[in-house]
Length: 179
Image (cartoon, rainbow, N blue to C red; front, side, top):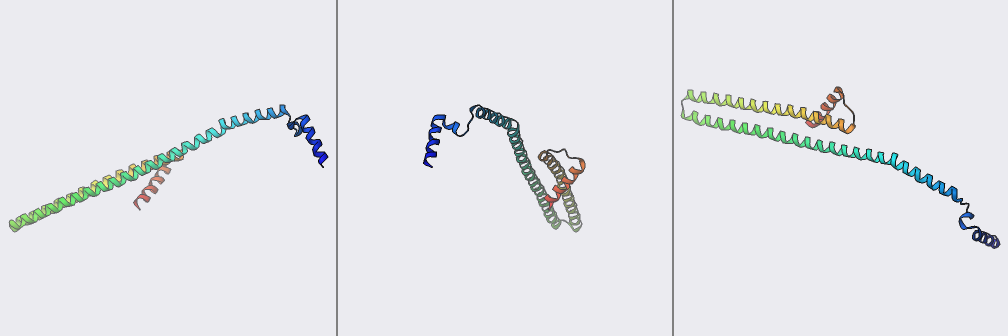
């Protein structure tokens, strides 16, 4: 056994270490060049475009999420604004009613009845105006929200949505926001 190892050791020393293991330099160099070419082609035409596409998708998703947050904030702001308008109208109406009641106490019964009727008409008009304004704002918000959700969905999916898709997405988004 030792003699076999000694013979192999002297053969390796005389013929070269790499030749002992069957390394053929021209084939080895050709394989290295082929490996480098394949690596370059894969990096240039496969991995690079895939990574770029994934990065674009990440950006589109992030933009879609940002748009959704802005839409939600706008919706909350508009609801708050509508509530303020309703509260102001109610406060004005209450103030007008109180003024009407005070003047009714100092006037005759006929004048008191006219003042109360006037105050109630003003209150009804104020409530109608507040309700109409709120309904208009809600309708505009729903329309804008639907448009933004449709645009965001189209951007995220990268697909042009037909009218049925847009209508379905708008209805689903409004249903989820209203609930």
